[in-house]
Image (cartoon, rainbow, N blue to C red):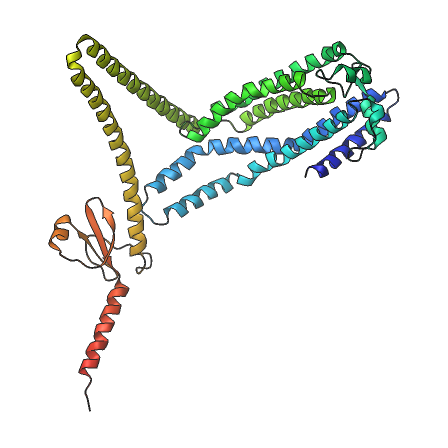
Length: 442
């Protein structure tokens, strides 16, 4: 699947090698090392606009978060049956007005990840091809011929062959004409540098996400915690794979250059975005409100847990001091927990009931508008188009006005409705029967 990318990247590497090798006085090793670095710079420069666009789109979306919240709050309380549709239109119109596209945020990772994998795969294939010596290389990689791959395998960096790695057996060190001490003296500083650049890059990303975190979103809070936890593994991966895995020196050099570029690019683009698209006061106010609300909620939950723990320990201590009061103490503890759970359930039920009322009114409005061409009749009395009325529980018990289609409940009031179309059909059927009865017989 990534083989076409290997051909494209190997073609770029070959072009750079031909250009660098044509410079007088440049050795074969220096030409291949410079070609790898120039290849990395070429690929990252080509992906630079996508990275900047991704971060700028993210900052614009963050600054529009208060407007999105206002739109959601407005249409969540609306009883218009088309409110969800209007909400999507309003949010889409706001995105288009500020030049924000959903697909623009997906393009950068979809382009960058395959390119990075293809680049890493090509370098690893070239380095592994010469792991037993450059004389063993017979086949090419992409547009690179077997002779060029042999040249790459015979190239060195600071006197160490590019295919060598610290975990290589002693026999392979001898085949490459080097030693473990020479390899580790060159690879160790590069591995630590790659891990350091990765840690700094992750710290920049975490700080940027922390400043724009949506504290009211459980998904975003989880993403932030995951990113903080993944920092350790991101830093440990170069150390673990560099010292214990089959990471050739060519890959380690690539890691150092790539991580240094990523760290510098992330820092520079972050500074540019901060200057061109600073956080708005509206977003800062919304962020502070949601953060304070989240902190208050967590403090309340912690206080409830402390109170429950204290109540449990009081019951345990009272039982030890006076075993005869054991039932009363534990009944009081369970009563306290039940009251707290009932209060929390009442709050949740009130929120659900409020949302259910809005949905029921929307459904009622949709049904009532079926024959009224968009004009919502009043529920306080009858209309010419729809006959709608309110049934009380007393009417239900007495069986008064039991006709029409049951729509739903608004609080304790049952709402029924009789469509004018159905009424006209019944009237027309009755008129036809009467006409037949009155028709004279000869």
